[in-house]
Image (cartoon, rainbow, N blue to C red; front, side, top):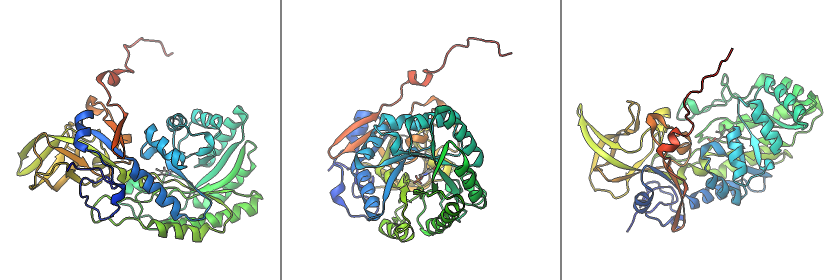
Length: 433
Ligand SMILES: *Cc1c(COP(=O)(O)O)cnc(C)c1O
C-alpha cells in the first residue's frame, strides 16, 4: 500500500493517536514528489476543514467569526479554501491584503493587525473597507486619523491591548502578551489611549483586541487576558460613552508537533471563552493561524547524502533552513518520517545544503536509516513553513501542493533561476543631492 497523507499530516499509520481515519487523504506522497520534485510542501484540505469545523463548533452559540491569520500560510488556494468554509482573515501587511483580495475576500472579511503599519498600508486597507484596524499605539491612532481624513473615510478601530499575562510557549519568540513586549498598548495606558481614540474625528472606536502568543496549550492566559479586556471595556464605555461592538481574542491555539504533545481540548476552550464573553453582547473574533493549518502540511525532501563526521551521523537532505526555518529559528521540533521506511533506525542530525552550521531540520534524532534517494516527510509544517522560506544561497523557494481526497494540485510553482534574478537590474546611476 502506498503511504498516505492522513488527517494529521502524518504518513501511513501516523504517530499521534487521533483516530479519525475517515479524514484520510488518498494520495501517494512518493508520486507527488516524483511529479513535482523536492523539496515541496503538501497540504491536506480535509485536515484544514476538520480543524476549522472543530474550532467553529466548539464556540457553540457564541456570535463569533474565525479570522484566519494569513501569515501562518498565505497561499491563495489555502485562503480560498478557508473562505468557502466561512472564515474571515487577520492580516499584518499590505501584501497580505493584496493576497486576501485575490483570494476573493472583501474588506469586511478582514481585520488588520500589526505593530508597524505604514501610511500606504493604512490607505490601502481603508480603500478596501476593512472591518477593523487593530491599533497598537497612540501614535498609530494619530497617523491613522490623518490618513483617514486624507482618504475621506472613517477608520474602524479596535485597540490591541497588551493584557500583560504570563504565557508559557515553547520559545520566547512566540510570546507576545507579556509586559514589556513590543506588541499592543501597555495595559495601564489603554484607558487613556481609548479616550484619544474616541475623540479623534476620523476614527470610530469599535472594539478591543489582544493576542497573547503562539503555540499556547493552556487557557489561563486567555482567561486572564479576557477578564482584563472586559474590565477595560466597561471603563472605556463609561468614560467615553462609546459602545464597543467587537472583542478580538487573537490566535495562538497550539497544535501537536511531538508524539507526546497533547492536543488542545478545543471544546473546553470554547466553554472557557463562552463562559467569559457569552453574555457580553459583543461580536467575538478569533484569529487562529497555526491551529487551522499547522498539522495539515508536510515538507517532502529527499536524502542527498549520508556521512559520518566527528563520531556523528548526518543525513543531508535537499531541504534546509531556507525551506523550513522553524528548527533553526525557534529550535522547533518537527517529526521526520521516511515515506518508505527501511525498517532500520539510526541517530543522526538531519541537515540541509545551506552554508550555515545552523542549517538543520533535526538534531540528534532517532530516525529511519534513510539512504540517498529516499523520501522523508517533515511533519506538521503547514504553518510558518513555506511563508518563512527565503532565497538565501540563491535557492529557489519550494513548490506547494494541495491535496483533496484522491487528487492533488500544485498551488505554488517551484521558483526558477529566472525568478531569483527577476528584480535585479544593471545600475543606472542617478544623483541624490
Ligand atoms: C500571528 C498572529 C496570529 C496567529 O497566531 P497563531 O499562533 O498562528 O494562531 C493571530 N493574531 C495576530 C495579531 C498575530 O500576529
